[in-house]
Length: 56
Image 1 (spheres, rainbow, N blue to C red):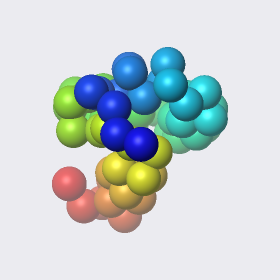
Image 2 (image 1 turned 90 degrees about the vertical axis):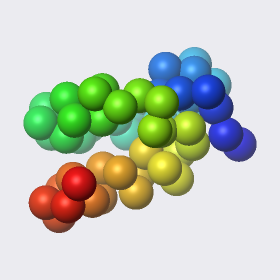
Image 3 (image 1 turned 135 degrees about the vertical axis):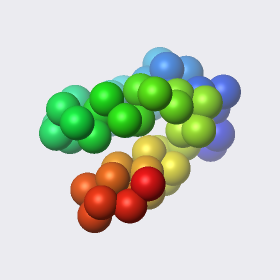
């Protein structure tokens, strides 16, 4: 399922918030700068994986 943004995803899928909260702070901060780019659990995981690898 796709959501409007990161915050709608958190409201719709509590496990997404748990996943996000477990990420390193620098990854969370980067994701927060583009909340509209995260609209599903898969996009959250992909974005986090890219950041953890050093991609952007």
